[in-house]
Image 1 (cartoon, rainbow, N blue to C red):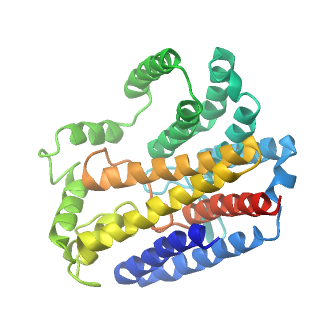
Image 2 (cartoon, helix red, strand yellow):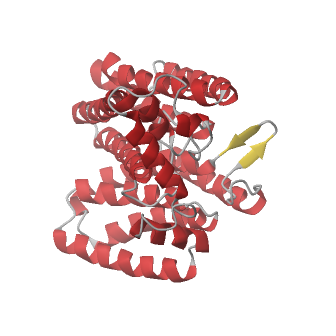
Image 3 (tube, rainbow, N blue to C red):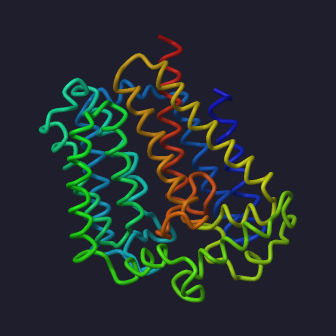
Length: 351
């Protein structure tokens, strides 16, 4: 149990420490969300996930509900940060895309647990592709390209880890490349294209489209070995670093705590992923194994997209660092993943 929650607790503590230096308002709100997440995890000690998710209709209901919330955000959601990704419910603002990640993990785990032997069949591949396609299309329309990429990562990650033959893999990549060309020409917004072009030419337009990643690199580079100290990071404290509490929270942390602090964060995250995979390997049922696999894939893809954007090795697409970046929906979605994994751990140990 401790092996799962110690690294998660370290990441949550890092989140509070960074946010307390960046914005006291965000710090208070994040503390509330972390408290709610802890409540969700505590509930997993008394709930048997196996007995709940054995009913397939529950999984389909979760997927359908998450899809409906995404559609509602697209239609009636307010425009915040150039997207319609949020649903505002009184004082609360929720991002349905975060909960779709959990829904997709459960749906793919259920689907592939019964068909993993037939993973090479086109019917299996195409059916699972449709599960990913519907929420991905809504995400692109919001527009939220980062979430669409995470959805794709969950789907394609399952296919790769379950042994999709290399010929099928190449064929799937070819179809994706063609779809990518269509999306580039007819779906992406101009600022999305500008970000991708800016990624290809990082030394150009450093005061325009490449401003955020340039400042992020400066923040990371100025941290040195031990960092500037708590609350002393000039890039984050003086407003040069865009979204220091969310998209570029890792840069904020490294600027103040240096390479040593960054290494602690990375080590905690990798330990968390390894523990999730370890629980999955010890699980009794294929469904439970695949849920753990899906949780590791989702968190891993999100981590790669966030840190890749922060360090300039990937375009900036607005993806949070799991359990560290500010955001209630992201924190609750991560807590839900950990709660389900913990419930799987408990049932495996008791059986």
